[in-house]
Length: 107
Image 1 (cartoon, rainbow, N blue to C red):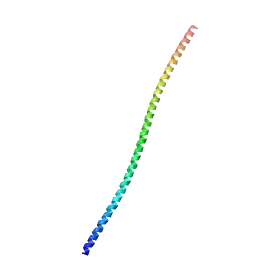
Image 2 (image 1 turned 90 degrees about the horizontal axis):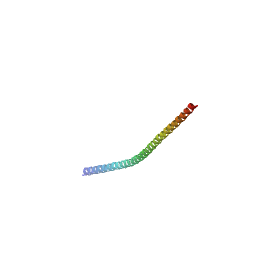
Image 3 (image 1 turned 90 degrees about the vertical axis):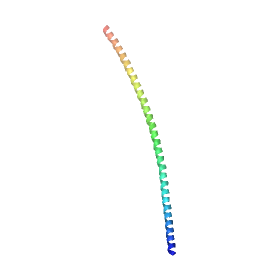
Image 4 (image 1 turned 60 degrees about the vertical axis):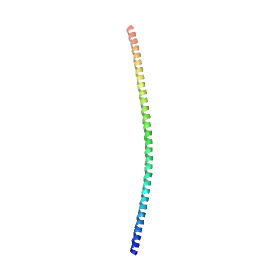
């Protein structure tokens, strides 16, 4: 009878110990899960920040490209204007030269 009581006591103690072990492991898993969730939230914030920075950089790049295209267009227009002025000056110089040549022929 006492052997049976000891066996029952040992079995109960073993069950209680197992329950305590399970509780401890559940607590550890819960804490680990909470840490992972916090790390996941932090990572999402970092990713969102990086995405925002990337979007901002892309907008700046697009603005720079647009400005570069405008500058190139102005540069081409200016080059065309300069070429027209040079051509007009050359034509005018040719006319002056022709007039000088005619005057020298007369003299």
